[in-house]
Image (cartoon, rainbow, N blue to C red; front, side, top):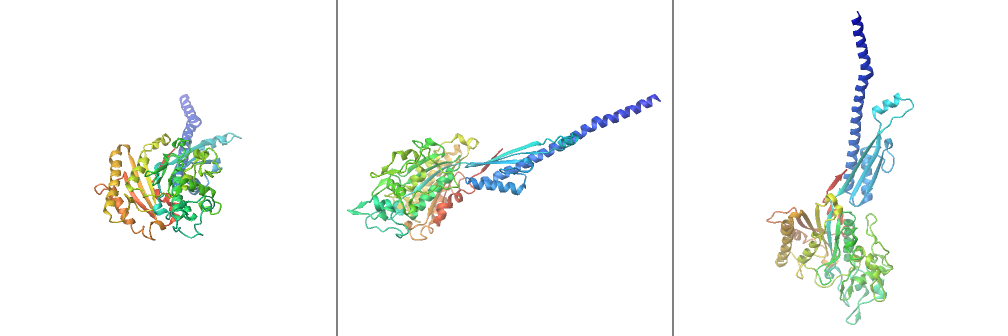
Length: 502
C-alpha cells in the first residue's frame, strides 16, 4: 500500500516537474525557433529589398538625384511603408541613402518585436517588450572606365575660310560678330581688315559650338564618376597630331596637371587665329550670350578650382593669358577657347596611335580597390568629318586611304589582343560623326556611313573573327541636339556592370 502511494507521489512529482520545468523549456525552444526564423526572414527580406533598390538605381548614375529617386520609388513600391527613406518608417525603422558619382548605398536600421519578448512583457506587469534591432546595408558600384576624348577642331571643315573677302556662315542675326572682334581686336590680311564675323567664326559657329559642347558634356559626364579616369585632347595639334588638354586621370587627381589645374592651357597659334583670342572673346562677350563660357550641367558634378578664378582670363592690351588663371584652368574653359586649327586635318592613323597610347598607358588607381583588375578602356574621337589620310579625305573606294586605315586599325587590334593580353585590357574606339554645313551638302555624310562602318568592322576582325578585347565603330548623329546633349548616356548604355557589396 505504501509503495503504491510512493509511485503515485512519483508520478505527481514527475507531472509537476514536466509542467514547471520541461514544458517551459520546450515552449521556450519553440518560441525561440519561431523568433529566430522571423528575425532571419525579416533581415533577409530587408537585405534583398536594399540590394534590388541599389542595383536598379545604379544605372541612373552619375545623375545622383535620379539614382536617389529610383531607389526611393523602388522601396516605396515593393515594400510598402516599411522604409522611411530620409524619415521614419514602420517600427521606427529608417533608411539612410548616400550617392556618389559611381555608387549608391542604402542602410536600414529598424527593429522587430519577437514572440518571446511579447510573452515576457505580458507576464511582467508594467514592462514593455524589448524589440530586437534589424540592420542591413547595400552598395552598388559601377565598373570604372579609362577614357580619352579627342576633339576635332580642324578649320578645313569646322570654320569658314579665314581671309579677306570670305563669306561667313549663317546670317548676321544667327551668328553676329563677337564684341571682342568688333570693338577691341581685328586681324589683317593683304593690307585689309578681316571681317569681324569671319574672325568670330574661327572660335564660334554652329558646328564648332556643337563640337565643343558635345565634348565638354562628354568630359563632365565621365568625370562625374568617382573612379573613372578621363583625358581630353584637341586635334590637329600645334606642330603635332594631338594637343593633350588633360592626361587620363581621375578628376580628383590634382597632380595630373602641373600646378594643380584641371587642364593645360591652350597654346595654339596660327595665321590670323589663336586660342587666346577665343578665350578673350568668350569672357568679354556682352551681347550674344551663346559665345560666353557654358554653364556647368547642374545635374552632374563639375570640377571647381581650389582658388578663385580671376575676373579676366586674358589681359588687355597685350591679350596674353593672366598668370593667375594658369593654376585654375578648367577643361571646359580650355575646350571652349579652342580656335579652329589651320593646316591639313589630322592623319587618321597617327591620331589613332597617339590617342590610344594615352588611354592604354593610364595608371591603375588604388581608389578602385577590388575593381582594379577591371580595365575597360574607351577612346572617343569626336570628328567633324570622315577620316583623312596623308592629307587626303577618305571616300568609298579610295584604295590607298582605305588600306592605310585598315593597317592602322589592324596594328592597334594586334597590340591589344596579343601584346596587351596579359593585362586583360579591353579597348573600344568610337568615331562620332555628325552632319553640318562644313562637311558637305545635307545627307552627304549619312550616305557614306555604312561603307565606313563596314571598313572599321572588317579591319577590327582578325581572320574574319571579331575580338572581344577590341572594337571600333562609327556613331553617326544627324541631330545636333542629340550630339550635344544626350550622346554619352546613349553611347555607354549597357557597357558598365553593376557590382554589389554589403
